[in-house]
Amino acid sequence: MDRTLRAHRDLSREQRQALKEALFNVGLWRHRLAFLLGRDDAPPPFLLYALLHGLARVPASTAAAIAGVGEDSPLPLTSTPPPSLALRASLPDWLADHFSRELGPEAEDFCAHLNVPGPITLRANPLRTSREALAERLRSEGVSTRPGAWSPLALHIEGPRPNLYALASLREGLFEVQDEGSQLLGLVLDARPGETVVDLCAGAGGKTLLLGAQMRDSGRLLAHDPDAERLDRLLQRTARAGLTRIQVLRTAPAPGLGADRVLADVPCSELGTLRRGPDLRFRTSPEELARFPPIQRDILARAADLVRPGGRLVYATCTVNRAENEDVVSAFLASRPDYHLVRPGEGWLPDTCLRGDFLFVAPHRHGTDAFFAAVMERSAG
Image (cartoon, rainbow, N blue to C red; front, side, top):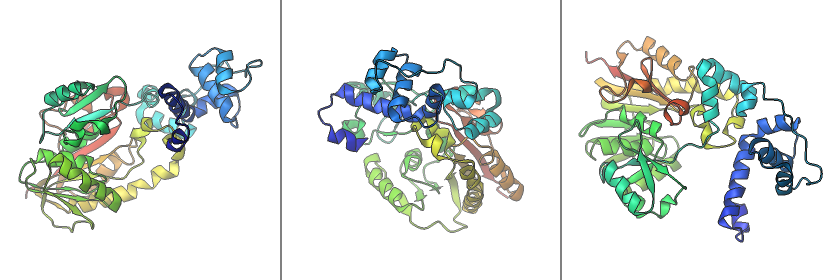
C-alpha cells in the first residue's frame, strides 16, 4: 500500500483514503463477497463491485463503473441471506466454529465486532502528566479524546485519525499508543516503587513502559524478549518516557531471581486482535492454535521460578482460546501448589471485566481487543 501511494502522488487525500478503505474491506470481507458472487475465484474487480453494491449499497451502475466491471451488464449478486456465522462475519468456517464453541450465544456479537475498526487508544504516562492534563494538551494540538471506561490511564481518540507522530506531546513522552485491554494486563500486576519486576515477554515494550511508570522509575525493571529487534525498539522508547531504570536482558533471567512481580504476556494465537488487520483471520489455522499451549506452559513454568515467596505472577494472552488460557493456568496450578489465584484488579477493576477468576475483556463487551489474564500469588511459606 505504501509503495502504491508513493507511486501515485497525484492522488488527492480523499482518493488515497478510498484506496485504503477499498483494499482493507475487500480483504476483510472476501468470504462474504465470494458468497454474494457465488464463486470463490472472483477477480479483484468483481470483489470490489460486490463490496460496493452488495454491502455498501452503492447503486449497481455506480459500483460497476468504480470497479471497472462494465456498467451495461452489472454482475448478479445473490439476495439470499448468509446462512452461517462464517459467511455473515467473513471468517473461515473453522474459525467461526471455534468462536461458537468458545463464546456460545455471544459468538455472533463478538464476530460482528471483529469487523468494526478498533479505536485508537492512548495511555497517559503518569511520570509526565495526568490523563486529564493529557486530554487538555491534545485538545490544544487539535486532537479530541474521551476517557477510557476501564483503564484509569486510557484516552480514546475521537474524530478523524490524527498523525500522532507529528505531535509534540508524543515526542515529549506524554503518552503511548496502547489498547485499553493491553493496559489492563500491566495494571493488574500492581507493580510498586522499589520492587524487582520482570516483563518476561516484553516485545517492543508497551507494557514495560507502563510498569516503569507504576514503579515511579525506581527499583529494578527487567525486560526480556527473544526478539532482539523488539528490545532495541524498547530501548529507543525508554528515554522519551522518562524511564532510566529499565534493564534489557538479551538472555532469559535465571531461576531463583526472587522478583516481587513477573508478567508473562506469552506468545499466542492472537485471536483477540483480528479487527486490527483484514487478513489475520485468513492466515491462521487450527494447527497454529495447537502449537502454542506447549510453549505457553514452558514460559509460565520458567516465570514461576523467578518469583519470590509472597510475590505475584500474571499470565496473559491476547487470544480467545481456552486451551491457551484457562487450561494452561489450570495445568500450572495443578503442578505448583505453592501458587494460587487472586482476583485481578482488586479494589478498582469492575466485575464486568472478569470471567470467573480471570480478567477477560473483548470488543463486544468492552470495546477493547480481547485479552485474558490470570493473577497468581506464590505462598509466603
